[in-house]
Length: 56
Image 1 (cartoon, rainbow, N blue to C red):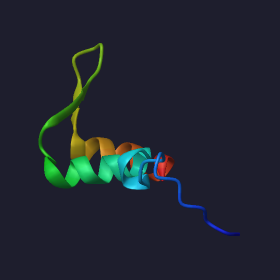
Image 2: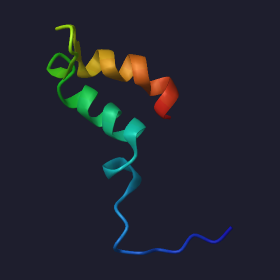
Image 3: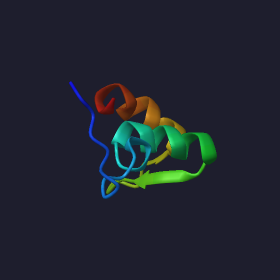
């Protein structure tokens, strides 16, 4: 399969959920990423651990 470069398309690390989670978890692993309705919250590291296998 030939890959075609299109400058209008963002790089995978800027738009693919798994890559974004990895980037944010590396940059700020202990910062709050998600706050759920019940008050529970996850850090970026926890979000990556929970969603990473599904996202990527």
